[in-house]
Amino acid sequence: MSNPMWYVLTKDRVLQTGNSISGLTVKDQVGDTVIDNDAKIITVTIEDNGADISMITLENLGLSFGASANVSEGEALDFSSSNTTSIIVSSEVGESVTWIIKLQVDIDLSDVSIAGTWTISEIGIYSDLFSWESWGWEKTELLNNYLPNVSAELDNTITFTVDGKNAEGEPYGTFENNAGTDGAYGNFVSDDASWPETDFNSRYRKVPTTAGTWIINEEKVIITDAGGVEYTLDIEVNTQTEIALSTELEYKSELFDWGVSNYSFEETAHMSKKMWYNLIK
Image (cartoon, rainbow, N blue to C red; front, side):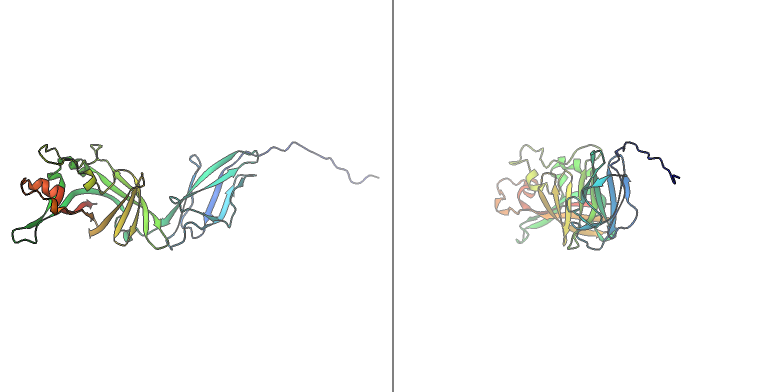
């Protein structure tokens, strides 16, 4: 009279080892998410709407079966450090992997005057040799005519990569001064042993040689090199394919040596008031 009957089947549970991210989207995202499974790097792009990148909402997160993460959908991700953040994904067996999430902002690069890669066309100075006197004059000069070692920098390129805009709408990104075919940077040192002073690196090294970061504040670009040193330069836009990065120099006319009459030295050491890097595309 038994009705019904059954078999009870059991097996040992196998814990899952997956700790991957299979999908991820954030608020205001545009375009597809790019997932590099080998490098454990994910890149997302958001609208250029002035959003606070320290509080970007995670909308969707897909994980390996049975895996867990240290963040959940609906939480805010903080991209304020170099436009990156991280998510730790742990498998059921407890093996954890850190995924790097990179944020890009969909910026109209035509609005950012320095965006792109530029060739250094010239490095020049403006000198004022007592122009307020009836016998005085002012002039511009290519700096490598006085300091030949500067020429090593004239085959370099300078790249400004745009990463986004801050809450004030100021563009920012990464900077690199790329050594040219000679693999060298300019050296602001005179070969003329008769000069009373020959090393002018502290006076003229206004554009760093190392990679770094930058931000535009009004008409100035502030570049911070790998060592944390800041370089502030005026941006002079000549055309869409030609700009100048310029800066004022300490004017030392009171140190002019009337007994030497070496105008090349005096212009370089004392009478120059401004220098610039001309950049072209």
